[in-house]
Image 1 (cartoon, rainbow, N blue to C red):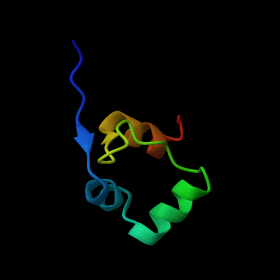
Image 2 (cartoon, rainbow, N blue to C red):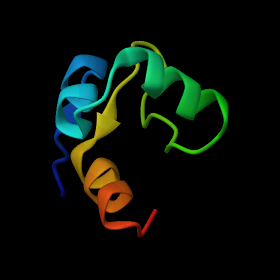
Image 3 (cartoon, rainbow, N blue to C red):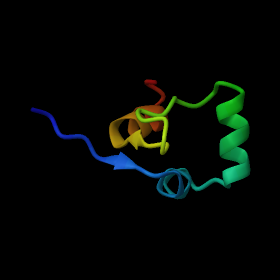
Image 4 (cartoon, one colour):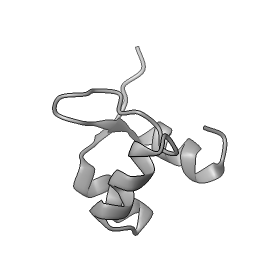
Length: 56
């Protein structure tokens, strides 16, 4: 079974080196991946890495 690492919002914005405001604008515009878990919002580390690589 594959175990995924999940990131909180603060960890995601720190990894992307952006502000929360920028992040929310990009998310609202549909230009950022949806969270793997909605409440509380969590993203898988591989989702973020794929986004940074341009593959997601």
